[in-house]
Image (tube, rainbow, N blue to C red):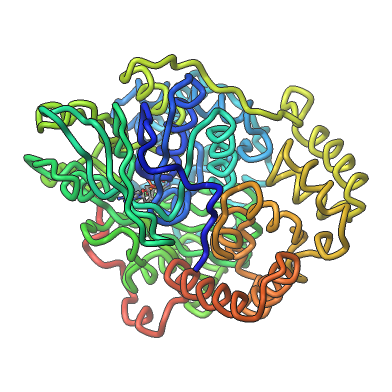
Length: 551
Ligand SMILES: Cc1cc2nc3c(=O)[nH]c(=O)nc-3n(C[C@H](O)[C@H](O)[C@H](O)COP(=O)(O)OP(=O)(O)OC[C@H]3O[C@@H](n4cnc5c(N)ncnc54)[C@H](O)[C@@H]3O)c2cc1C
């Protein structure tokens, strides 16, 4: 049994705020409240960032689609947050050029789109240079039997929200928060209708404990309704109407675009093809899903729909099911509005106050996006009477004002010198760990085993994985290889690579044979629940299935 005793708070401790849920929203709230001086306990039932946050399209967007719904305030908020993330986390959040490809006989009129994009640019500014080469490349690759209108616009991408959450988590810890993964909120204790504490279970040891607190923030995303009910809150209706979204990940293909593409799927729904992690991320679907978010997986019909839509847009791709590296799904924690089609439900976030349900001092987070997690955290802090100043990142090694490329180059050079590692590994480390890369470089510099790459297909080092155990609260090998140093998301890292990574990591950590066997079995079990290799059943659905249609 694994445990990290140094992370355990003592039963009987008192906290100002207990946050349940260690996705991007819960971690952002814990970080915000702790840096405002509150004593914070953050509980996550599995690992930090193992829920919906790691199953998104990873776009930091102003929300061009929200313009269509006339939600100008949400667009403004999202664009402001996008700029903040680009400035404060330049190694993790990067500008990304999108090409919007709309069929000329489709639902969108070119003039309206042009006006919308003009407004979007006015509100958010332009960052990337629209390149004639990427336009030409896309024009040539798109289905020639249809006529297309092409437009370019800017957004941003956080290729690894797992890393953003890991960094925010460390900010929270430095500000004094007690943070525990593999610990589930079980109950909220109340006296006279007011929250006075919580009960939780350490899932590693099976021990239950109670702590006193003034506030409970239920930031469990798609789990929020069931967590509130399990805590004895009588809800008039569910807080969340879960909507599953699936992606497929494919290798570079014939006619692959040079930038991200936003277009329409075969049934006219929004469709993204995004360069990501040396591969292409293709999504998404919208399917009502009120099951356990932990076990959600893409349906065969969804996989077939995404593949058919990709091949229809890029006829030269000719991708088959065997080409799909993997597929994955997550449940959007949208507000419960059963009468609306999923695409019409607002993407705004809300704080639901449980005072009228007999739990004064308990708030539940409904909705939200990666993009707006920090502003949600500020909103939450204000609501509970805390200062809502923006916590500053601890170490800024990269200065976007100097140009992110030259800044990254200089920083990588320094990291390479300290660790005595290749320029490629130093660059990879700088991109994932920013300012913290130097501490990991020192660790790598000490020992040859630490300087080894995790496997032959990645430049990332064993030292990064060891650092995740020592300083980023990873408990299992899956926490490391799927989230803190997420080389397991690289489709070219096959099972042999992962065995190599586990063995190298085990040797550096001093694991015995039994621990290595357990870690290996648990890693593959978790990876295969999350990243699904499509089975032969997926071929049975040559056309999109109707329940993915937007109304
Ligand atoms: C397909 C898809 C694509 C998306 N694309 C984008 C995008 O491109 N850009 C964007 O900005 N947003 C996107 N989103 C939205 C965004 O991913 C989510 O809104 C966001 O990640 C929600 O974060 P969260 O922290 O609220 O929930 P989660 O990340 O799900 O975290 C909730 C956590 O609570 C934990 N938990 C549950 N019960 C308990 C308990 N009893 N005790 C303790 N912990 C508990 C869970 O284990 C989980 O880790 C997308 C979402 C989906 C599904």
